[in-house]
Image 1 (cartoon, one colour):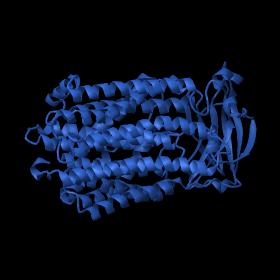
Image 2 (image 1 turned 60 degrees about the vertical axis):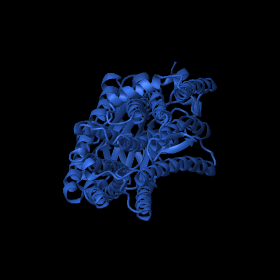
Image 3 (image 1 turned 90 degrees about the horizontal axis):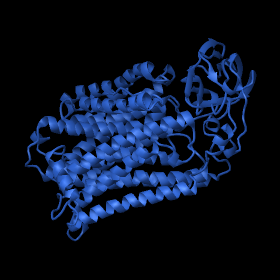
Image 4 (image 1 turned 30 degrees about the vertical axis):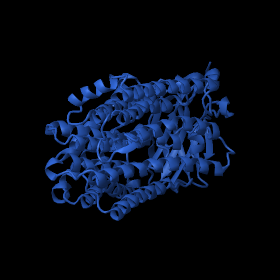
Length: 594
């Protein structure tokens, strides 16, 4: 039965039948959305008009229906997709590959959520009838104008949905990339997360269109805190491998990504919402993001994902605001420095309380530099977003330079974090201790010796990690001195578990397998756990991502990655265009109404 289970899990793309079913379902949903849109534009179907009027009177008070209804649909869809994403990541960590994409129940909330984001954008495009929704609207036909935020929201949803068929193509060409940071996986996450920027643009257009409608301050504060808190959640999903404790990249990436997310979201929160806006956004983040972890682990019964704190970063932003809020770019840069320094210290302490792989002294110098760079770049982007929403962007040469420089800084920091070496001439000896159980359920402790002894001096981690066998086992080893370590508990050595020693010290990362199962789908043989073994440290990608195909030309991977990168840049530049468009075309918001 175990062999049949392995054989039923494809290692490169979905079965043709599942592709046809998924394509058919997408066609039906798209057709239904098209019918609703055409029926609304022709006046034959009144459902959308009634829903828009209800949302205008209720949750979206102060916004026209073409902004209120899409905002509500988008936020609900984003929470649905978020639940599916963390559920799906947990399943892949604990069980490995899917039998098929339609056999993974977590894929359904992801698909529903991403299609909901696309639907929200389409609703914003089709809802305006007999009116031009503001000076920033985009002309569709001679007398049909759509809000720029709606067009961008639909584009972000389409970009995210495009990740699904491209992901299947990627697996067929390169095999399964069992990592969150696969290029097509990042499309799914990026499209959903960045849709919040489009939603904020849509809110700005709606407010400008209905400027005469009084909105209670607490209602506006709450709505904007939900949007910016959603942006913080979206930017934080990139950290999910670290949240679960199985990162496949250097640890310095985590403080950098936290700083970018905090800088961008919390700076715009404080400027756009007002006093306490950064803290309110973090509260929304903690409720939703923490709630998802509780549902996935406590209700569904999957793995727990740690939640970065962000409260210290929010306090830094709030403290910097009284002196600098009137100069948003300076405020963004100063907040970024505080986030990268004080925020780094707070998250360092928090990591020891909640994370499977807490931060260590190994990453402090480089990690803090990366965090400051990320915080400043994120803070400047957040300041630009606020200035655009208020109609106060600096002249194009300045705005474009700051925007491009921030993106280049982020790209440079990511590239630095990806520079990894594999230890050479380093061997790991594993001696099993306290063997228990039969071959079908064998566990053991281990004494592990690294030679030469000084190959790992001040490591970010030395662990035994076991995953994809029905759970996750991360054991931070106890150092005994002289390059020798011991496990703190029994590790699984049976079934479909993949059990290995992982080393990360500075720029070097490597792994040594202890036990690996048969995987006929990729032609990989079982590696049994020996009572005593000595093996050379190797590139851990070969162990963690056994499913990747070998022999694929390097140029093909470069071209495929370039296609994904181009799609991503198109979305980012389009969002920048949208912010600039509403800033230049809509009247500036008076300070008393901000």
